[in-house]
Length: 570
Figure 1 (cartoon, helix red, strand yellow):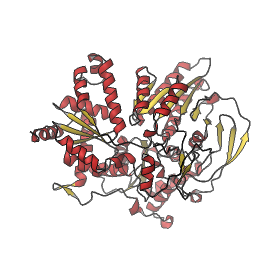
Figure 2 (cartoon, one colour; figure 1 turned 90 degrees about the vertical axis):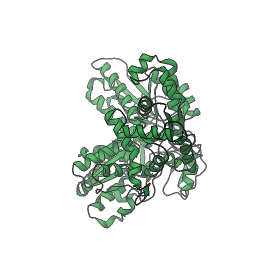
Figure 3 (cartoon, one colour; figure 1 turned 180 degrees about the vertical axis):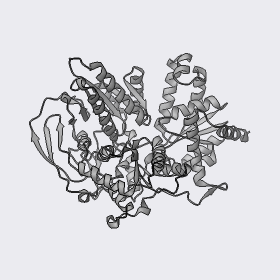
């Protein structure tokens, strides 16, 4: 399985797995968390940041059962978190996986204070991906200077870092995987802030199974094949290294995309460049899902719907031509989204018939088609992490507004979270804000976030001799069958290490932090491609994407390169 091979490459053995029982796990215990069957008070186990240094899981809080209140939490198969039960701010969690997520959504005030003071001394900004550890995200959300913090998808992280530099930040911490810190650093350099250091949160390589799939010989061979076709344009997912982007650009004209703008990228390029052949990679699931989406549009939409809802220069004929010329790399996937397969889909269909279904574009086709059908009926969304967050926020907002000032039964909105579980932190924040701004809807509207976690699960344990052990109590929820509910690589970003980094930048050398080892990968530094600095070649495809996002169209430079590449084969 992909997960097994990924970890074995890093010298970590994978234990055989079965569904494990578990409790609340984490470095800092919350004051209270209600489960669906019992109310559980946890005794704070935290004595200080120095007490725990594990990147994934640590000390087990002491649990004391108390009498439970009645909850409307569903009794379906998957673990879930209920927000807004009884009009209160407490969360109701069902299942050990959900408990592990909910346990740290309310931040530890001491941790917030320590990070705030360290950031101020270091004059540091922080950009973080939505998939960060729940505990880490909750602390970041509670920091008083939100101008120096941004939790977002990968598209926004680089721009946010630039704004922080303009605001006077003299260092940036990038919480994500290595290609993200690499991209943030490159975008900062393009905007005149290359002198400001960017730091990762672990000395080790923070990998990505999807990015690594584009670093194999097969990807280069696939691009060479693309270069032999008429007017080829390679649309490369942003979840790839700068080196991959540079090597791709050297083989075939290339533009970077994200899950937020991949559809726009394909529509605009095919409208703007004649006789275009598109080559999308490396995310196989996303590519196939886009083909499915375009196929349904051709089948069900009218020309007018396509022009008004999708793109003014497209109709059914042009969409059919685009679809016929869209080629997808067949051998790349993400270990997180790969888990949402047939078994999970069957459970969603059979046990959650009334739920809203959300799915990231990276999920396998079975889950995507369920979410796609739901979206056509207004009962779901397919897209990026931001799209999913915005959809849930909108639906809860509509329900709260409809219940304002009215009596009646409680309306519980169920959402199947078809993406990485770290998203729940931002979802909880937005839902709580909505309910707080609609006081008479509190207690009348609830939101239940359902985690479709595979039954055969393992967790990452920094103290185990194997590194990975059976169970989901640590919140990782990874399956030996090939997928996770949370990303083990993203979880290498650790709150304690972040505080240590900030203190070290501020001049405190007592934490044993090697800042040099925390810098982004620099595999292209000092290298040239056809006489041009390799870093510049790697950034080129990102800048083409920026032009599209800013101007709504591609620059003539890219169009001319595509046409010239097509002419050279004749």
